[in-house]
Length: 130
Image (cartoon, rainbow, N blue to C red; front, side, top):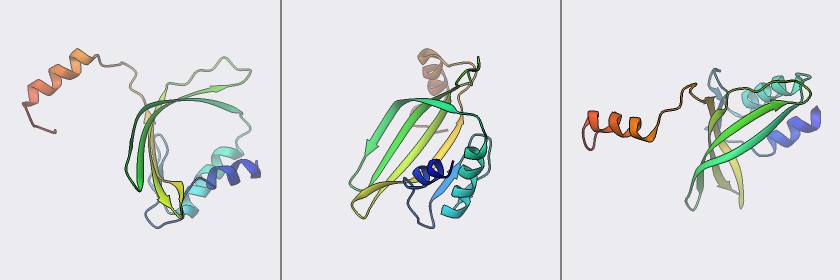
């Protein structure tokens, strides 16, 4: 509805570097492209429910980086989508926090254990990023 898109856009900062990437979607830069993408999502007649779990959050004096897991369900339908991992970056602007970046992607189907991650890191060698 119109009020949903207004609420969504109220969290975004209107700056040239503001951008959004929905799962599997292209990069949208600027507030107009972002609003158009969310308008398309809200026009769908499916009511979605979100359960958001914060995985990590780092805050500085003017930026906040939040990594979350989004679990989406649909009321009245036996539907459970794979979780979505999202990185949200917020910027302190005019004494309020606004979203500067939303980058979301589907979680992997098979979860990697901590031991598997450790093995991957040790194969690369100490201090290697990639």
